[in-house]
Image (cartoon, rainbow, N blue to C red; front, side, top):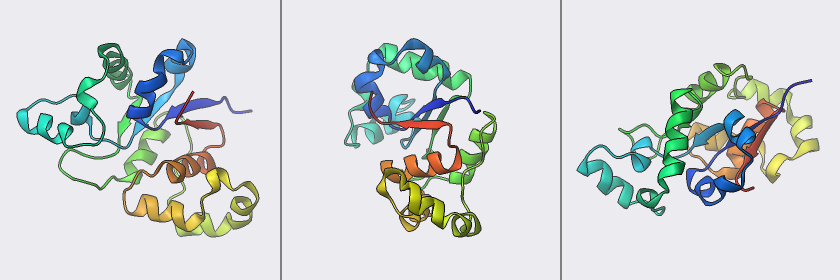
Length: 165
């Protein structure tokens, strides 16, 4: 039996409830954020302006929360989907490699995997999203919550994607 592991997929949502999450869960969890790192940790005036332009006020995040993210980042337990030099595109192949580095299965990122899994998806209907929605999400580098959670769950049944606690 696989050990379950939580994966928090939103920095802004996690910031709202992280103090309620048991410390053991936080210690063992992964963070997969759809944001850019510099929105939380700006290093220049340009970074600050980019962060301020977002709908979430990342610059007001609690210092203890930011310290938690930094600590987990040192352990390679944080993945920011959007690289600094792009506005909207994230590479899910890199996410998959990151998950593999944590002894997890790679993400289902090929048409052939989804073609072979149609019945499973129809039976389970994780997060009520279709295969096409999931594929469109990762092919366009988006981070729509239900699609991300479904992709993570189908690829790794032992992962528990979290948006709330």
